[in-house]
Length: 390
Image 1 (cartoon, rainbow, N blue to C red):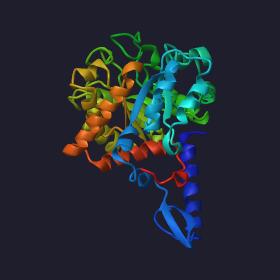
Image 2 (cartoon, rainbow, N blue to C red; image 1 turned 120 degrees about the vertical axis):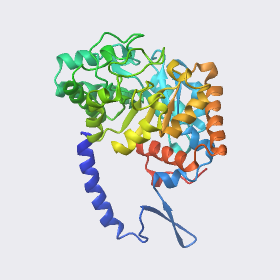
Image 3 (cartoon, rainbow, N blue to C red; image 1 turned 30 degrees about the vertical axis):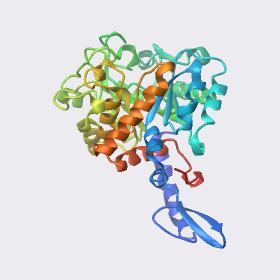
Image 4 (cartoon, rainbow, N blue to C red; image 1 turned 45 degrees about the horizontal axis):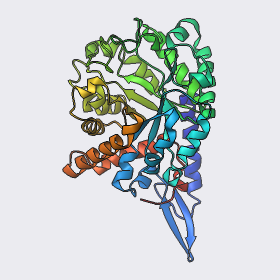
């Protein structure tokens, strides 16, 4: 089922719910859960924003953080899961008991609101789950040898395999336009990109994303607003894209088409865009709030690329400061790299930095609540079943 079809079905269901709401004991702007206590009826709002508004600040902040966890050490993530962490990105080599390890780790989630479990499963040079699910062609190979229908079927099969292991999100596909060699230190894309053609890339990105969704995995297109033509890999150096006027006529187009089609999540790049922003895109309010939210009307989940990248470290004194800048810019979730030994202290440092920014007034609780609500909506939480708890 494509995102556009899902949107049409959503409109129909909305109409049905509106009619049904007229028969409820209490009517209102939002759906309510009715419970009877001591002969009285108690109504409770079920919206995501209403749920997160009752959370304490540390739980709110935790929901905006994606922690890196080695697949061989998932048990180490249980404390963060218990604190309400929003996401887990799997790193390292796969192990045969991965489904059991994921299931055990997620049991610690408060109120049953489990973190998104994600990884970079793009195919080709970037396959975190290869030992368990086998080879997937690179985007470059798929773009050159497969029809969009075939790409969609391959992505759907990949999604089924990921779901069987316990994952819910794929940090793919790459929507950048690139036909150069790579990935390498000079070019982050290379064979990770479908093509150097705007039309081919736009078409194949949607096919791959639709296939993931049909298979039950949330796709994340990256790296907004397009890394194609960037000289330098932001993981290793500070880098700039071609000028904004060039990006608008090339690299931005696949993202525009995917957003129009209803893509649920976008990852923002760590490159600077000359003529648009002087700071890395993931930390730029002009890029995130101005372009992605306001101009393109994207209402889904926005994730940063890794804030541990050299391009970010060159611009910010600490990971915590970068995380605060990302949330101020309008990102909903922040990603970073950390080894198992420093995971707990690094995560705590990000929470402390955001809490301090709130105390200073650099960011508001309303902004944090809105981001957390977006995370819950992306998880498709049945809010009426979520207990009211801080």
